[in-house]
Amino acid sequence: MQREPVQTRTTTIRYGEDGILYITLLPGAQEILADAQENVRVMMRLSGERRTPLLIDIRTIKSQSREARDYYNSPEALRITAAMALLVGSRISSLIANFFISISAREGTCPMRIFTDEAEAQAWLKGFLR
Amino acid sequence: MSTDLGSPPDARISQILDMVSHMVSDDQAEPERSDEQGDLLDRIIDGLSQASAAREQQQAAEAQAERQSQEILDVMFAAAAQDYSQRAPVGDDDTLLDALATGLNMLLDELVASQVSTLHLQQEIIRTQDAALRELSTPLIPIADQVVVMPLIGSLDSRRTQQVIETLLEGVSTLRARVAIIDITGVPVVDTQVANTLVRAAQSVKLLGAKVILTGIRPEVAQTLVGLGADLSSIITRGTLQSGIALALRNSR
Image 1 (cartoon, each protein chain N blue to C red):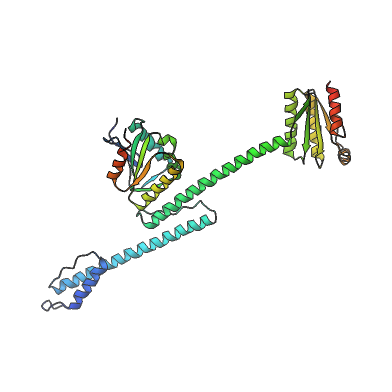
Image 2 (cartoon, rainbow over the protein chains, first blue to last red; image 1 turned 30 degrees about the horizontal axis):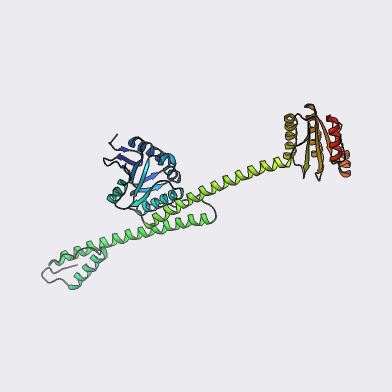
């Protein structure tokens, strides 16, 4: 399993020793569909295509297109997602996370929660480790 | 300005310094007290210039907020006028207005997507209904071995006349019919277009080795057909559907 972090246009992705996949948005990231597709490809590669808990730190995100949001919510992208913790801090990140979760809830995808504390997010995600 | 460094500082100077310090920052610690009156004046000047810079910064931020508020309002006004193409600008400072602009943009994205999806659904429904209606508007009914009837009801436009010919030919071919009855009792107006359709249908059916019997010709329709000079020589005609069926059954034996 690859442990070295991979940097994409909008994120840094690494598979943690604790079995959690850490996706950290780069400062000012503006995600579009192509970014979402690239990120999911990397996530699949790092997780070995196994269902994995994801900790997505979107504290510094600036925007996310609807197409990107839809793709992250697609069965293809969620195939490897055991649970998703969204780490927020800024007003914009909170808004995007709430929007994302409300749409996912409508489509009933996988367990998702918003956190402002990374340790709490990790603790929650550990409950989904096999 | 002359200062007497030997005399104690004027209390009012300290008071001004305190006020300036307070203007620059509420969190700033108490200014250092100095016995040197000259230092006090330097600090006042320094404080005033900081206050001035802070004020300029604040004014710039207020102007920026004003502009951004107006831009957000413009997007909302456009959306109220059903123009969902505009998006509010989002700054880099994560201000309340940035968050509002982000939320507004995301809502507009969802609205546009929902509209497109509804439009696609409507178009699909219209296509399905149209197909069903076309099928119903040109029914071909097999009434006996090798005899089919197409009762036409309502006016015939160019699309429907084409449908009549296509359905008739396909039905005659598939059912291996020898006689096709076209009943126009329910067609209110027979004009050149309808007459030509009937002639074309009859000629096409003939090529497949079958005959066409045209029934339901009312007196006024007969007059119209004669008046139009339509060549009906390839079509057998009967006044009623009943007589047409009787003839067809005889011919098919």
